[in-house]
Amino acid sequence: MRRNQHAWNLRTAAHLESDFYDVASFKAGGSSLRPLELAELGDVRGKSLLHLMCHFGMDTLSWARMGAEVTGADFSPDAIAKARELAAEVGVDATFVCANVYDLPEVLEGTYDIVVMTYGVLYWLPDLVALGRVVARFLKPGGIFSVIESHPMNGVASWVDDHLEVTGRYFREGRGEYEVTETYADSRPLPPHPESTWPFTVGELVTALATAGLRVTRVRELPVDVRQRNPELVQDQDGFWRLPGDPLPLMLTLTATIP
Ligand SMILES: C[S@@+](CC[C@H](N)C(=O)[O-])C[C@H]1O[C@@H](n2cnc3c(N)ncnc32)[C@H](O)[C@@H]1O
Image (cartoon, rainbow, N blue to C red; front, side, top):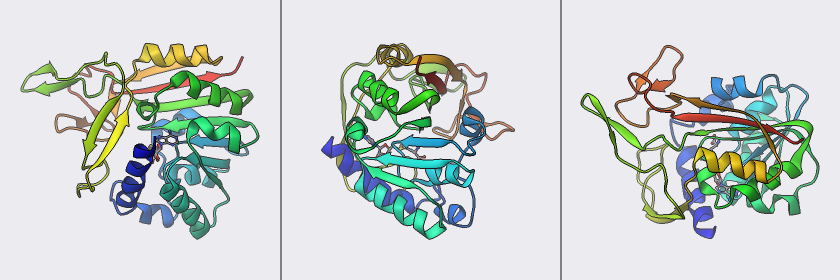
């Protein structure tokens, strides 16, 4: 886990400077939330919201600006320090906790109306059953767990000339170890560093959450991405990016409750 923590400290520094995160617009009063999570969570006014793996907190603080009482948690000390700094600078009330998601029950109390995690989170976690148990611990009865994530099929096939070519594997097992020098949010290189990720399938995700005692109420597989991950993606009128003909799921949303 240490290597990933170091990786996310490096990425945090780069992301704060990036056009992708556009911190200046957020500081000027804008929201970093996208239509997908706005639609999934609906009206958050007056609700307690726990944002897991919140990075440097812009989404967390955007939900606070919409009237939620927010707590953000992340294991990167640099990300959490920036999140606290940002909250103070824009004058938004929020609690930020620095912890590995698996250790959160040891350092955070209470239960929440909404537990949410979004965009690039699940494949950093080696044990989705344990994640489900953490979520179940923090959900209020009647509360909602919401995940918005890249679909694990995203990147498995690419559009080459006029046909799709399989370029990766959906069924991958075990830990992926990579030497990394880049990040999705910025074109400038990062210092070379190792990262570990854990692939999952939709079946494994749903089964893990059910095993942890959650009741999965909805899974949506969407043919759209929120960013142009590769050049063959074309932007639609709603701002989403799609492969011509919508041949593959690119994003997924999942909602669960506790029985
Ligand atoms: C891709 S970012 C999430 C993006 C976020 N939704 C946003 O909009 O900026 C993934 C985050 O997960 C955090 N993370 C990765 N593994 C973690 C773990 N085991 N426990 C807690 N946080 C973790 C990283 O520090 C990083 O901030």
